[in-house]
Amino acid sequence: NRTALARAEQDYGVPAAVIVGILGVETVYGQQMGNFRVIDALATLAFDYPGTGARVQARSEYFRSELAQFLRLASRTGTDPLVPLGSYAGAMGMPQFMPSNWTRFGVDFDGAGQVDLVHSAADAIGSVANYLHAFGWHPGMPATYPVSFDPATLNLPALLAPDILPTFDVAGFTANGALLQGDALHNPGPLALIELENGDDGPSYVAGTENFYVITRYNHSSYYAMAVLDLGQAVQAAVAAGE
Image (cartoon, rainbow, N blue to C red):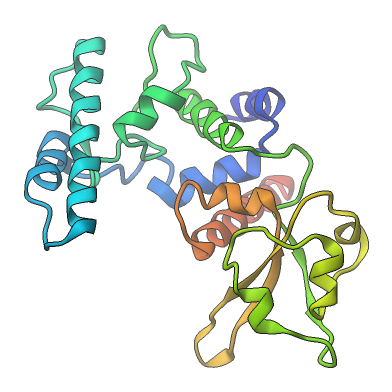
């Protein structure tokens, strides 16, 4: 898939390692795309979402919309809506796109005439890159920087208050006791302090850029984003080593 990955990086500015990381974390490169009938998953969550309260109503409405999107997609592509399989939440294909995202961000990257995220690795690669691009990926910007602390000026509660949302410019970041080096001192956009719990070993920290936040638009979790980055870098290193 090197050709498709290189083209996606060229067209959308998203590094191949990030695309590879997402596809690996999501479905182990298409090996685990889900065993639930999509129509069953979406209909259940649309009309029998567990629990009560305003959040349940909002989630039910979301899944009703996704069910409608799924039926439109099946009609548009001539697919039997009783056949597609996906996750328990109705996500489909190698990148685990919900139906609305399949429609909005799916790319016919192999030129076959339709978007096929189940069988076409090229379409999956192009669609993930398009998704991240649409959410504001900055080409050439690292997703994280190393960070250390100045105990004398550290204001950890202030740094952690925005959670993973990039909020601090470099000056504000360092004024609260976070120490950066090298290129990080010239990062053009806002930063967030990312705290990662490690059980009994205590937390570790990185400075997250806007690109780190873009990855969390795929899944709202700093651990998800770090898993994507770590896996992508490991695959990249293995390829470079000829493994």
